[in-house]
Amino acid sequence: MSDIELEELSRRLGEVTVVDVRNDHEYDGTLGAECDPRQGHIPGALHLSVDDLLLLKADEVGEQLGLAPGDEVVVYCHSGSRSAFAAQVLRQLGYEARNYAGSWHEWSRTELPLET
Image (cartoon, helix red, strand yellow):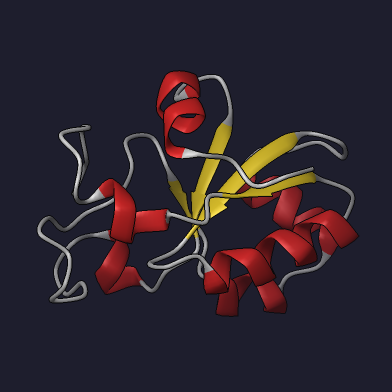
């Protein structure tokens, strides 16, 4: 699977599972990067930090995210690096993982909705 772009992701919210792999304080918006004009997460995004992802077994990942093998899932972080790694891990576990490379750095600069 390829990366996903802002336009496709924003159009498909609610259709595809989205996972924020940042740390808790980034996800909830209490302490994000100063370079981002807005803090929070993409609406409906589940949270599983990349560090926690690495500690889970394949079946635990599916349980936590509500995914079955082969399901499409989009991951993002702040700038696309952690999420690129998470996408590789998820692909190895049998999911159709796509990286939103623009990640929060891009989303926070739009007028698109967010949650905290």
